[in-house]
Image (cartoon, rainbow, N blue to C red; front, side):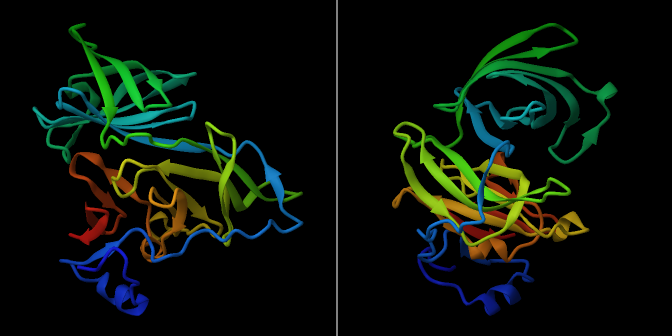
Length: 289
């Protein structure tokens, strides 16, 4: 086990990634916060950056877990019934804060997918409160017409949780119109004041995700490295983890040593990167499975 506050020897870390058991590293880095330097002159404000927000929710009675990716016109979700061990992949539309999602795939055992024609179809309709993260939803069995009212709350609930908006800065290619982000201002949504500035990277301007990577109830930033990999499982990402103790974001070189897309498995509090790279999150620590 590696202490949450100790700095990791990167050469040993890289070697240990090949082990199948008992590797634990801190997701939060050792005192590597954003540099409060001024923006370089060539950088310009970039608008229209899409941010996919993934919310981890649970029903109040404890039966369901919902991994909801919203903030985009075509939201998607994975709904897990902890009682029956069924899960549904849902896709649909978002208009304002109103969601309408229909089943596109289902699993009987969370890893055995079946055809749409062989499954119980679920429709989810609801209104998302983006301030407190709750979702008042109706789950419908489209075959029988039976409905169930379900109130979803954050999987990990945090009191007085801050909310942020982001301003992006970088450059736009005059020919391809492609955007590169090189700095991000973090703005407190309630006060309108900038509380952090993230610099020292170059990432794609058309891909930003905002989700809770270490299951502490706070959203973290995932950015796509400027150099896209041919193989998605070899893609590298830039990670900025929110530290509630400092109210700032810290870059995580530990996570950046791992290639592949970070997929959350909310019902097990795990993080999967592909190629057999599966980690358990325990008290903010990554443990290789």
